Length: 126
Image (cartoon, rainbow, N blue to C red; front, top):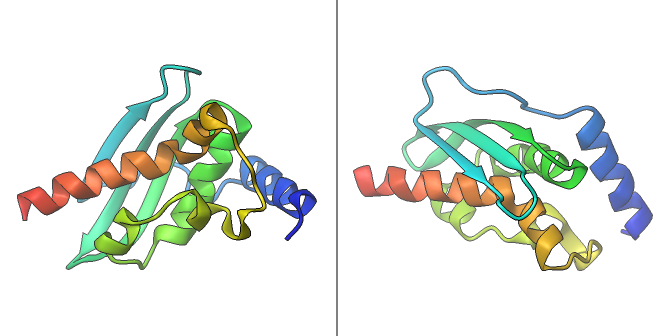
């Protein structure tokens, strides 16, 4: 995909976020802040066995962090915990079509980092 297609995808997820909000009675919940830009996210998920069966995120901040939260909630649902723990930026934006510097990558990965922290804590408690 070209960069223009990914820009359109990012804008679509920003304008019409999927799974925005917080789940009631989640199995996992984690809030993370990006101190370099002020973005923040709270992610909540339901886990059945080793599979994330539902996920919602409440992101505040730049377009990229909010869009990435929406994209992640679609990509992570119905995946195993171990699979999600291996997710990287490429899982959010396949084909390497989105090139981000370190600061922007932190914005794009904020929700993923929060979800991975939550799932690590969940696994410790099992």
